[in-house]
Length: 210
Image 1: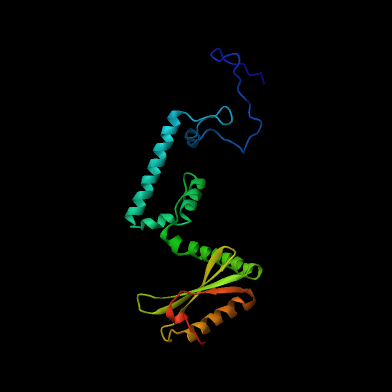
Image 2 (image 1 turned 60 degrees about the vertical axis):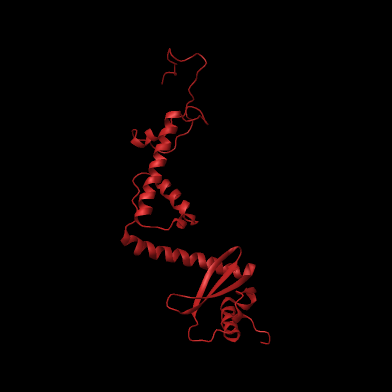
């Protein structure tokens, strides 16, 4: 192969670096190649034209999200979800051609996969109880059907998981019953793993001579 010779329009001091590595096969040039700024040196800055194009694309992406958001009447506070930006990042990595899941997939196979993934995460959380200890948290509330529910959560290692909810509608919500319910949860979690129990400050949780 003959050595590279710069054209007459290039200065004598200009050199074009030759790539020393290739990353996977390239067959022809796809349309996606036109979306990236050509770089001749590491750290080269994109052109003003490409920056303007990039802003237009980002604006179009934001508006597409807005159309979906407003059409589905999604509460704005949902944008504070810790999974929101992660979803956007994952879709970006997938690149052009990514097909969003259908309603059938969301309510069927993907839902089942997510349930299994969550079971694995919860099991990892359970394993930390014996290693780091845990805190049992309980809170009572009334749902729209006027049922009195007791929620129990377990916190360990900086993360918290929902353990279970008890329907206490048929019981007198006093200190004696609440103590019994908490003891059952302690036995389920493992008495040796429980560091403390945290409740709300409702009067029913307080008993001077119990």
